[in-house]
Image (cartoon, helix red, strand yellow):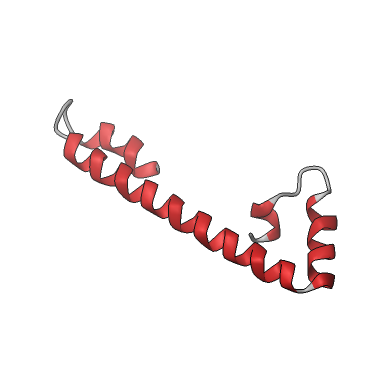
Length: 71
């Protein structure tokens, strides 16, 4: 995402269109892959009752989410 904002500093208006489009497609693809991995991790956690219980307790804390938990 930082690369997208840097494009404005490196190229004249209109020169960065192709690069921006490619980067946006790459970001979209990576976001989709992250979603797939997150779903797989949740499925693995749910297989272990104790781990799932701990997971639910951890994410119930205000300010704690998937990023801080590592999922």
